Picture 1 (cartoon, rainbow, N blue to C red):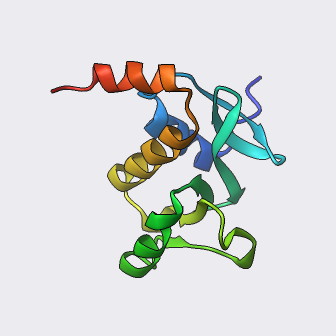
Picture 2 (cartoon, helix red, strand yellow):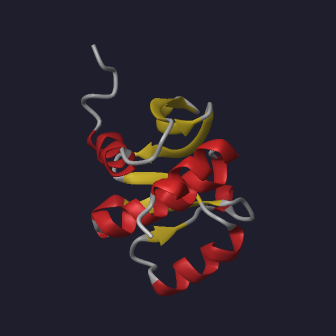
Length: 120
């Protein structure tokens, strides 16, 4: 039995990450997560909220331009991660943020393979 089958948040994230090589659903900090090469890049914080890795230089811009979708708590201040309100973000935007998070953690070999598969 799949322990993640009943979690719609991780199922949505996994569906949007299915095109990325090496992605697996696992537990990270005790919650359902997406990992690549054993490293977490997305996880369910609580129902309806996803933690995504995010370059620090991008976070402030996202908070400013899309405060309904992206936020942080004191715990994540200064860390390359942000919180996403899943009911406030469409699939295309979430897919992009998942790709950015994956790029931060994926082994270079997987990144090169994925980039080589992209249409030119």
